[in-house]
Length: 503
Image: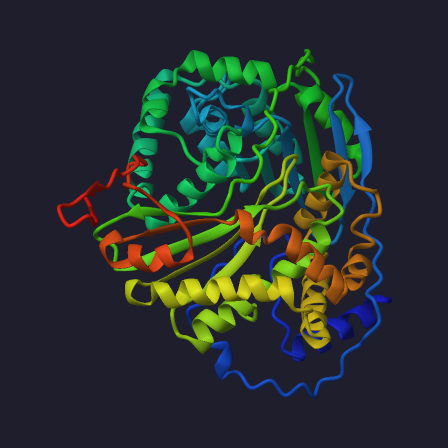
C-alpha cells in the first residue's frame, strides 16, 4: 500500500469509530470520561477491506570487538536518536532471599560512577537536553538502560549511557537515600487494593516460579548492600549478555567509532544464566479473599497462564483479548460498566516473555454489587469460550489492532522495540511485516480455540480484595474461598457455638 493510500485507510478506519488499543496487550488506562454508550455510531464511513501491506525498515546489525550486538535503525526524519540496552538478565534472576536485587541494581546505576557523582550525572544529562533511565521490572527477563536526545549530542549521550553501564560504584550514601525512598514507596503500595490483588494473584498463579514476586520486601530493601549490587552487576552486565538498539538520524558508519570509543572497553566474560524452574502445573479453580475491612469496593482479578512471546498463539490471543476486554469497546467494559453500571471499567490483558506470562481480567466494584459483578464476569468468560464471535465484532477488533499498529510505525522508538523483540525472542525476521496479515487470518473458530485454551475456567485463579464481612458470602457462590489478611498471612476461621465460622 502506498503512503497516501495508507493515510486514507487510517482516516477511514478511525472515522468508522474503531477504538485503538495498545499493541503490547497491556492493561489499558481505563477512561472515566465520556461513556461509549453516549456515542452514536453511524457506520456510514466506507471501510477498506484490503489487508494492510507494510515493509518495515530493516535494522543493520553490527558487532563491536567485545562481542556486543548492536541493531541500528536509520530514521532521518528528525535530528534525534534513541538508544536502548537490554541486559539479558532481569528480576527473574533475583535470589529468593533478596527479591528486588535486579531492580535495585538497575535503578542505582545512575547514582554515581567512577567518573561522576549522582548530582554530576543528573546535571550533565539535563545540560545535554537528554534523557537517561534504567530499570528492571519484576517478572521481566531483561534489565533496561535507555537514553535519548538530539543527534548533535550523540557522543555525549553515549558517554553518559556507557558510564552508568560500565562504571557504577553504588555509593553507600546514595544507597541509603534510595532505601528510604523505596521503603516509603513500598509502604504506600501495600496500602493499595490493586497492589494487594496483583500480589496475591501472582503468588497463587506462579507459586515457586520467580514471576510470583512483584515487589521487594521491606526486609530485602533494608538488607541489600553495595557489595551485593556490585556482584550482580559484575555477573550479568557484560557485552555478551546484552543487546543494544539505536534508532534515529544516524548511520552505522557514524555510530560504530563512537561505540568503540565509549563501550569498546566493556569486558567480555562468561555468564551463567539463572536456572529457571519449570512452571507449576495449573492449580484447580479457587477464590482468594484478601480481607481489607476498610474497603468500600471489591478489587477483582481473575486469570491463568497465557503464552510465551514466541508462541504461535500470541497473535490469536491478542485478538481474542481485544474482543473480551482490551479496551472501552471490549465485552467486559460494555457489560459491567455500560449495561450494569457496576464499575468505571473492566478490562483484560496479558503479558508474554521467555516464560508463559499471565492472562488477567480485572475490575473494581462497589461491595454491594460484588455478586452481580462476579456473575457477569464469569458469564463473559464462559461466552467467549462457548459461542463463536460474530464476524462483525471480530472484524472491528482486527481493524482496530491493525490501525493502531499502522499508527505505531511513525515512532522510531517503537520500530526499534519491534526490531529488538524479533532479535531477542528469535521471531521470524518478517514477523512485523506479516503482522496485519496474521491478524486478518484470525477467524471466529480460532478465537474460540484460544479462548477455550487460555480462559481456563477449571483452573481460573480469582483474587478479591475487599471487606470480607460484606463480600465473602457472595464469593462463596463461585468456588471455595481462602482468606488472607493484608500482610499476606492466611486467616484461620474458627467455629462458633452455633456451628458457623467466625474470626
